[in-house]
Image 1 (tube, rainbow, N blue to C red):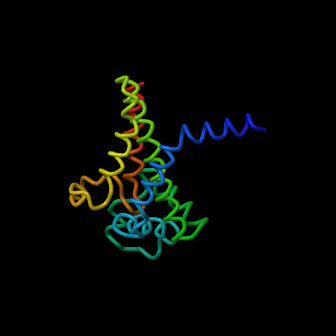
Image 2 (image 1 turned 90 degrees about the vertical axis):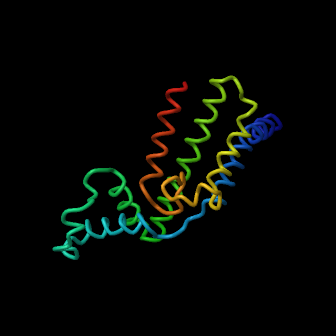
Image 3 (image 1 turned 60 degrees about the vertical axis):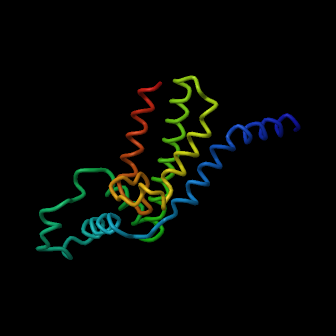
Length: 169
């Protein structure tokens, strides 16, 4: 029993900084609601469920539709099974969790590559603080790394970080 407890505590101590970083990240980047791009993704879902509502609507007929990506159908599945509010929140939380995991793995890989593991926590917390709302560069919308609403850019960042991670391995 003591051996199991020791292994459990050792595991918690090893991953505690990363768990703290993820918790801190979610404190900084809380869900902002159905705003901006999230409205468009929700309209795409409504159009897929009830296309007659948008007959003759030029943006839907000729504009950005959900046939080119995987994000809109995935979001549609969440909204259909969990409802609009909960589905959008969970999709946003999943994108944020993916972002956190990608950043942790990327920083871990880079610090190992340069043989400077002792700077891992410092770089990780700097990265989290630098993306927090209210930092000077977050006032420029196109430079934001983390959105507080459901959008596909979060998954694009995760793919970008995963690609960099593979390059450093």
